[in-house]
Length: 419
Image 1 (spheres, rainbow, N blue to C red):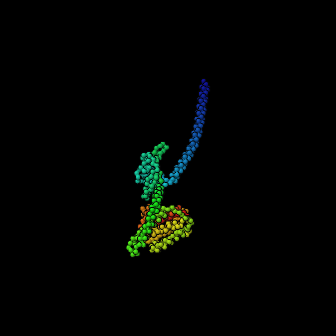
Image 2 (cartoon, rainbow, N blue to C red):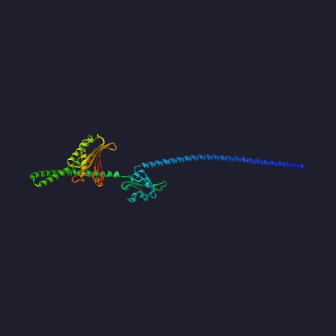
Image 3 (cartoon, one colour):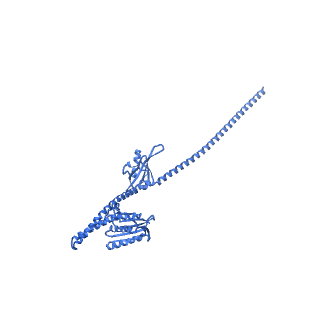
């Protein structure tokens, strides 16, 4: 009985042990399966992580390329803006300047640092109201094209400018601000005035030539009868003084008519190669003889940079220009002074410059504006045709004549001709 119980217990222990082993085996198998699954999951996560890393690297590379391209395009556009000869300014929706290119700085005389962050009115002023600025476009949405106005330069003088404006929008059509493009029209205005002056002078010349011919004939008759009247009067007759006044007046009128005909008559140049320095010296020496004969307290100085400067000119007519400039300089100094004659190569080395300057009282801007107008003169016995005739001769040689002067600082005439 006891044996049977012992055997039964033994069998029970074996069964329990077997069951424990089975549970352990199952647990181990489950553990291995779980471990395998975790490993697979880890490997999948690792593969996904690697894939994400590759994609992230590709995205970063693409982003860098996009940023580099954006910077390149931005720099390219900035270079274009800075290379434009016209001024460009951009304001935001509040009218504050956010862009001011190099040409705009040059035209207005204001630096980028002076205007950026300021309103249009603070930076440039509104001398003609907002209707003549980018602010009008910002307020109304209407663009302005090919308009004209004046801007005040940083140093205070006015600059004529042509300008156009338009709105700046984003890709959705929302208004970001407005842009104004403007150009300095100083030279254009000067050329327009020059063209107008040329048209006026041409019309005046045609009329003057007709009038001059009509005047010359009766002048000859007056002079003839005055001479006959003088013969009939005795040497001590006081009326001879009146006859002399008539003859003197006729002579002056005849000189004016002759000068007028010379000015209106087409020039016929007999140009050939001439040493300009020798021609100037010859005219200056002749002028000095006249100074000495008339006891003028004027000293002439010479500055010849080179002894031989060849030009193709008509020496007879060009000598008239030289003498006219010298006489003008002497007449500007009735109390005496210094005249300096300079001959040298032009700054661009493509021409020759003749300069005649004096130490006289100079001229105001009002006189300078009218200086080359026919019949305008500041001298009591002047015809007002000397300078305009000189200008005509110089321009016939494809040259130019200009003057610099200011009140109290003397006057200098510059004659540029091709070498």
